[in-house]
Each structure stands twice: as C-alpha cells, then as structure tokens.
Image 1 (cartoon, one colour):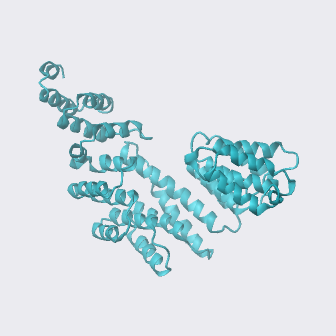
Image 2 (tube, one colour):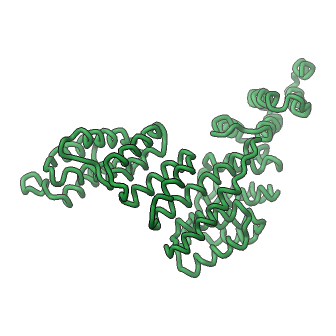
Length: 397
C-alpha cells in the first residue's frame, strides 16, 4: 500500500485498519494509521479506527479511542462529524467512561447542526437511558420532528430498560418502586410509532413484549407474538426469551415451556427466563431440574441465574439444595441493589443445612440490621451452632 499509493485511498486503508485492529497489535494498527496524513481522508480514517476500537470492549481500547478523539479536537484542519459520536457514546455506557458522556453531548451541540444525523440522536438517547435519565432521553426524542426506526427503538428501549431495572429492584429490595408507568409508556409510544407508519423490527418487538410481560397485558402480548409471525420477523433468541418471560409472567407456563422446548439452541438467557417462570409460580422442583439441565447442556450460570435462583426460588429452598453457598453469598454481597431479608434468610437457612458457620454468621449480621425483632433468625443460627455441637454459642444466642 505504501509503494502503490493505496495508503491515500479511503476504502483500502479503512479495510486494513479494521482488520489490523482485530487481528494485529495496537501499535501496528496505529503505525498504519499514522501514515494516513492526507487531509481529505483523515477524518474518515479517525472515525473508522474509533469505531473499531470501541466495538471490542473485551480488548479495553476505549482510552485509545478517546485519545484519537482528542487529536481530532486539537487538529487545525479537522472537526468531528456525525460518524464520530455514536461509537464514543456507546463506549460511555459503562464505567469508567460514564463521566465523559455529558461532555460529549456538549461537543455535539457545539460542533454539529441541530438537524444532526439520527444515529447521533439515537446514541444520545441510549446513553441517557443507560444512566437512568429517562426524562432527558424523552426530551431529546421530542426534539426530533420525524423519528426514524433507530430513534423509535432508542426511546422505547429507554423506558423498557428502566422499567426492568425497577422490576429487579423490587424483587430484591424492600423499596416500593412502581414500574407500571414506564411500561405503559412503552405501549403508548409503540402506538404512536405505528401511527407514524414506521415499521417495527425485531428490536422493537423485544421491547414491546417485555413491557407487556411487566404489565401482565396478555392481549397486547399475544398480539405482538402474532405480529412477529405474520410479518415474518426473525424469531431470534431475544424475541423468544421475551416471549417466554411474557407468558410466564401471565401464568401461562405451558405456553412458555412449549416455546422453550422449540428453541433449537438454548442459551443462558432462555434458561434464566424459564427457570424464573417456574420458580415464581412455586414449581421449585421443575426450576431446579431445568437448572441442572442447563449445566448438562454445557451452559455456565451467570450472575442473573444466581439472582433468579436465590430471589425467585428462596421460598422453595433451592439455595439449600444447590449448596453453592460461597458463590451465592458473593452474588448477594456484590449485587448493585441492596439485598432484602429474604435473601439473607435464605443464605442463613442454607448455611445451617450445610454447616457453614462463616456464611451463617455473616447472614445473621445483616438480618439483625434489617429485622432486629424477628426471633426466627436467631433460631436458625442457634440450630446451626447446635448441629456443630457448639453449645456455648447456642446459649449465647
């Protein structure tokens, strides 16, 4: 490329940068990049490399992407354009880059016209919804005169994502947060989207079905299921998981399990939805059997699996039977929301069954802060001491 002059042409240079950023070392990629100093193609190459660096979060090259963005700002002949920002906003959705998102927003206002590219608008909506600022997302959405599919999906996801966070928060903490209004707004916005004649895609339907599940809106949810089939949308894992969760929430475990059984390649998300469905309706044995089958299928449980098992199944003793106390304790202790007494009591009971004094005492210390007046918690610890013949500790409790 150097000898033929192809280094000065946009397409071959962008392809080699994309490949090298994935397959080669960062220093090699930057060496190629530094050869492309021609001003007519420079901003395009900057954008190409920024997009590539932020598309692989496992490589943790976000700091290099922001360094490149700083070079754009300090270059006399360059100015960021509509293709510069979406990838950077995507990178700002996770720590430690959240703090850069608001500053990037001010740069968008400074460098771009009000009618900037819809994908920039969508990336802004997504960023603010990730940090829980739904009202800002809605304000930005309302400024768009003719939202396209990406913009509609972004605002729908903003409400749905925060409804799901509130739903999980209610399940594992004692705070009374109502997610009904957020889910209802998803249905209302979807109705507006249909009136605007923008056709929904698979991403839209996942959001809609999830909102129907949160509300227990059986009629709207079955309509969404029929729409997916009628319009020949791809019944991917995301839609299938949303449908399993929806039917389970509405009490139709037979339909949920039928869908689950029809999936050719079930992943952890599908298993989590079905295990939760069984557990919340009191089918503890079925939930545990499915959990075992998940392991037999070679799928490792994630943090969501553990929370679902402990949170939804604690009343039927699945934590006791699973016996994964250390992993369960770690998940409870590090979860983003403050765990409630149900989870700690479940761990205390499991510690008694398996004779784990360390976790039993830890669980009781949290329970005495949450429920100092409940004597049953002390009885559980006393029984743990008794099972280990520590009679002096029994008397002390």
